[in-house]
Image 1 (cartoon, rainbow, N blue to C red):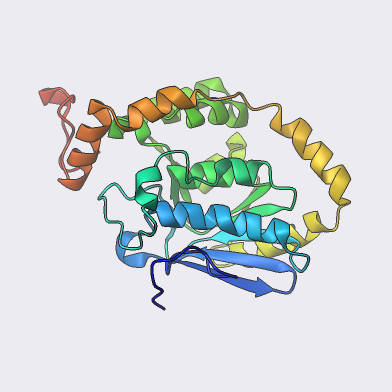
Image 2: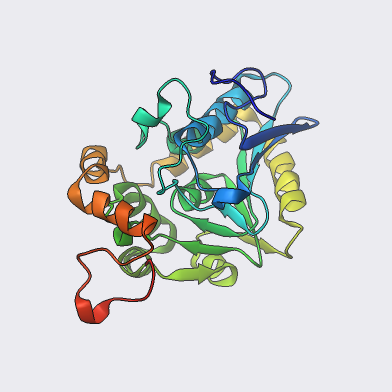
Length: 271
């Protein structure tokens, strides 16, 4: 369904690429942009943030479940720069102003991720900061930001606390892809289920969490959140608009290695 360029209204999350459906007291938000492999525009990131706020303000909703479509959960931002759903100059706020990460981390009501497939970039941060992440056996996880010229200090602060410093170094510095079984064994996620059942399992988990006492749950979440390090946002903002990120974006769009890769280390296509 097409909408005029306007802010979110009701259960509409400000973009045709997000669908919020109510299943009783559980809200299910689906990222659905298959022609761009679910790559996130600023409006989509902000729409996820809006959905978290919508659930927390609603007396009729107890929890939010996030999922994707096809073989992709959330792969991160659209590096091609195609902002086909832009509204109110929201694209100017790309970087940390439109992202939902803090909203998910500090949400009083439960947020659960149903990771159906490729999960990387901002998608991996969303999954890790959810109260619980349920992954399909077909899901894969990756943090490729350094290969794009981005110093993602959010990852550098969150991932070591989730999986340990050596494993975080490995993922962040090499951009390796990790399968669901490995991600579970490392503690990146906590539940792996048969492909196609992850959404139903995530909804069931959300129901379980929502049965807990709200004030007690919030207190426990505050204590858990203290275990994560604070990240250097100023350095990350500078990196996002610096020369390496610009070259990384161009290389991604042109399906080539960035210029900083030595000749003898270059691969075919994008990294």
